[in-house]
Image 1 (spheres, rainbow, N blue to C red):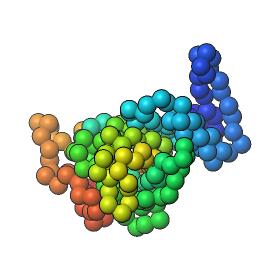
Image 2: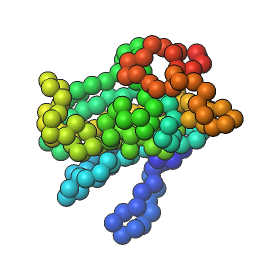
Image 3: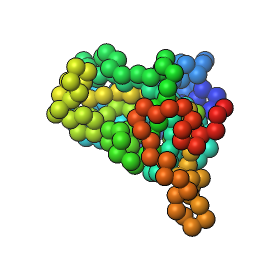
Amino acid sequence: VQPNNYSTFYDDQRQNWSIMFESEKAAMDFSRQVCIAKCNSSPVLDSVLCQDLLLGEGQGLEGGDSLEVAYTGWLFQNNGLGQVFDSNVNKDKLLRLRLGSGKVIKGWEEGMMGMKKGGRRYLVIPPAWAYGAQGVAGRVPPDSTLVFEVEVRRVKLAKECSGSDGQSVSSRDSLAPSPVPNSDGFPAD
């Protein structure tokens, strides 16, 4: 994904291709389909597949960074998107998390590294990196591959949270799954 609705990719002969789309939506739809095709062409999905839809701006996320995310999660069924099992897109609260804290599935921790504020990414997460053999009762069947579209809305870099001695200034930087707004040092905007 490149600015101005361009996408670039390499084919199986290592030739570089560039496509310009009429709209941002068309470029994102194409990128989603590329990610699904990568998944369907993998003999065994043993790691998280990531496909940027929008790059965002600023510094890439690293372990320890705090963020607020809008997301939708689908079950991967019949080689494509199945039913939505979770989303906060049309809700008031964003999901707050700190990368590396272990509060979300391993596939999110891995798949969101390097994202930037305003970035949007498509993740295909195999069962071992999601909920595994246990699933989630009533929502995610056992051994389910999941697809998420995640958008980073706000970021607080770990570096910004530490004092001159490198120690954390606040003990409030561990994020709860359903926090109250503005409780984590994010400025209101």
